[in-house]
Length: 68
Image 1 (cartoon, rainbow, N blue to C red):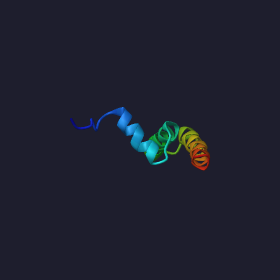
Image 2 (cartoon, rainbow, N blue to C red):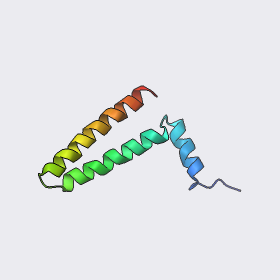
Image 3 (cartoon, one colour):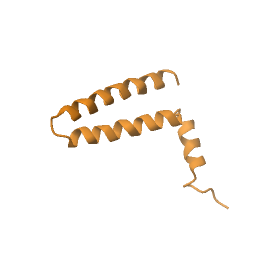
């Protein structure tokens, strides 16, 4: 019988073999979501807060990569 290619365990194994941890994956997902939100937000205080959060997550992502 073949492997279930939709299995979360298989996905995790592939990511782990590529050097990603679940935390790194989540951070990258949040970064992508924030970029979309920033693009769609008109100039406002909310946009500034989103950019600040994006910058903080980018730093977190860099630290996670360095510690891998």
